[in-house]
Image 1 (spheres, rainbow, N blue to C red):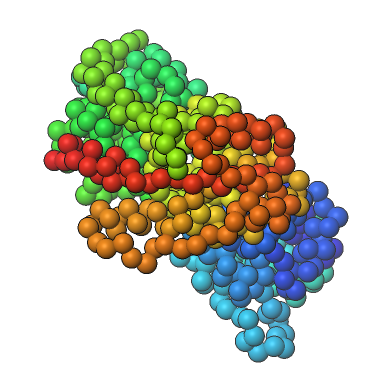
Image 2 (tube, rainbow, N blue to C red):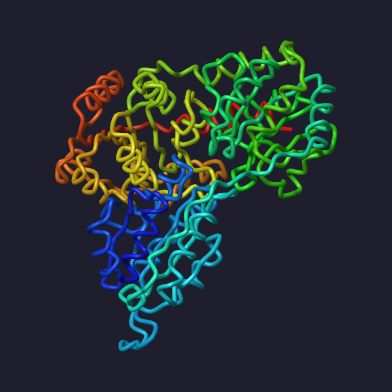
Length: 545
């Protein structure tokens, strides 16, 4: 058996469905082995997009997505998306090629130390130097990528190793990972702290979105009556439509929801990862924090929980619920006024008819069109804050946003991966004009794959988030404006269908028509960000400490 055949057999053994990437000559043996396999190879137009797609697969499934690139520039093009997966806790296995390592004939042409380059970005990085290593290294790569905390693993397969003959075709079976449960002592201590609290809140973080703990958390909230809020990446674990929801912590402090957070005497912090932008800041020790997670807290001057419950989150939540009385926290008078004021302020412009459209109206219209299981994949930009605050997700991983690396360029590739995996569900990619153009070439990938996908472009002809920050610092408007192509013609040139919104009441019917027709649609939406300073700065000054 050729080593590349053994490599593919090991990937099939891991249940790999897709490999996203761009091969080079160093990958040709591996590509040929893939040709007769059960794995679908998805050719992309940029390596960065391939890794974004693989990361999204990992995010949605909990199983490592896989991407492929060649040596040198192919590998370096992966770096941003690998960091996106690593910081965002998305399991991914990255495969790169390399020149022959036993008898090189091309000097240093295109050769970089990719293994070493990857080390600061990934959980593990290895070069395969013997074909017989393949089964163990592949099994190890997937295990490391998928176990808590999930992230990226890199394997380099040199071309001479890929084509060498191996005698043994044995591959290591996948093992079921049995997670440790929190100790009885930790559960008992947390339960006592919860029982003594008068104004408790539950925080749902990204770690709760990675695993199937929706039901235990839902049962906990129903039994205890406790109110909850979520981080940006924790949206959807519990529905934003239920009465116990008070809002999303889109900022670290001084937002409407932080009125309630500051009044709470206890925060039960479930699945939050300090990598995500902090949803609240700890001050002093009067307010207690219970950290419930797969791993212990990383102590910082803004986060130092007094109680930690470390182990399988779902099991911990179930056991805590068993120790608490029914409707223990049903008296919500202390927060009802805050919750109503938050709701009124955030949704006050949902029906605004001005044009170009305000982002508040856009988010409200998107929510009207999307089914409960429809997926909105966000790029990064000013619009992300509006979706984080205003969009109520009803199911896990139906609002995909990146609050860790927060890189531009990920939105369209992420939406493509979602559409590929879930052809029967609505998938909406939301991009700013800046972020869209960073990987807009992947429209060709989407049309070539005959996907059903709608892309909504917030068009303000500039880098809106940085313009807002520039204005907030009272600096001159400089260096952040650009010109865009005609997005309708641009979409048409790829074989997609372009639309341009020209008045506010066109957005909902245009989106509905696009979803009903199927295929790839691009909607050019002129947006008015002039409310940013008033709504996100001036109106929130009332909460300054």
